[in-house]
Amino acid sequence: MVPIIHPPLSSSDDRANPIFYTLKKGTKLFRIYRCTSEYCPSPLDFRYYGPLNRFDHHRGEPPYLTYKVQESKPSKDSQRGISYFGKEFSCCLVEVFGNTADAAYITEEYSLVILKAKKDLNLLDIRNNGAMRAGANEASLSKVGKYEVSQAWSRYFYNQTKIYTEIQGIIYCNAHNNEESIALYDRAENLLHLPEAIHLLTYEELKVHIIKVGKKNNINFIFPNDYKLIN
Image 1 (cartoon, rainbow, N blue to C red):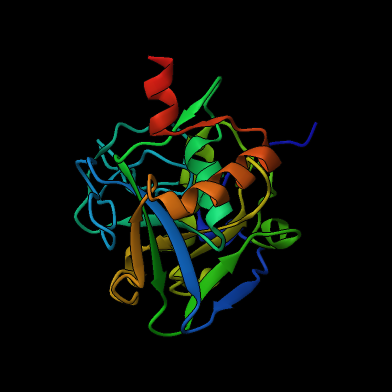
Image 2: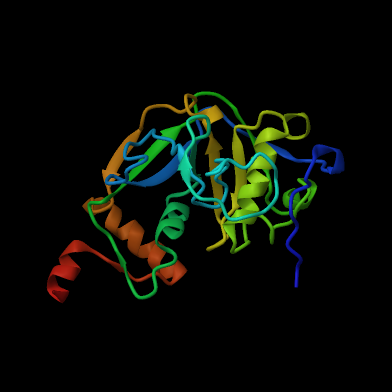
């Protein structure tokens, strides 16, 4: 079993030799967002509430000022925002719906947005050997089941600018199907173009693509007309 590595308690213990990835200006980023979300209901919104998900770097309540791994109560953090993207539409679908047990319902609650980077973005690359080069391993970052571990690492990456520079996010392979995903920090919030396209997931022309992703990744997607028949 691969051990879960925790972040150093201080930068003086760090022997990292990180790899960085330049996300080129004009690169398309795909995001599925929930229009009814309390915290980020719009295409360009970053979520300033957390930690909730894998690489959330919010400090929680009470705010954690160290890198000790512990469960954190989510709270508003006006200085730390995050947003998650896929380099492909399929990545977004799998990340949003990959944990559904029997069926994934496609509803008007979800929208797809395609954004572009306004300029080159500097990302910490933890794909392949990048996780070990960052001081951890994939078991501790993109594959760990307990998010408090990867969240502690994310806070560490964000804070330790002498080691990791002022990175604008992280590129990693997701835990569902290993496709490339990107977590962008608040440092990149103003560096994305207004949406190139926005579509509800119920948009008819997306259906064939959603079905294809479902077959490839063993997800049973149910569309509005289908569940009308079921009910």
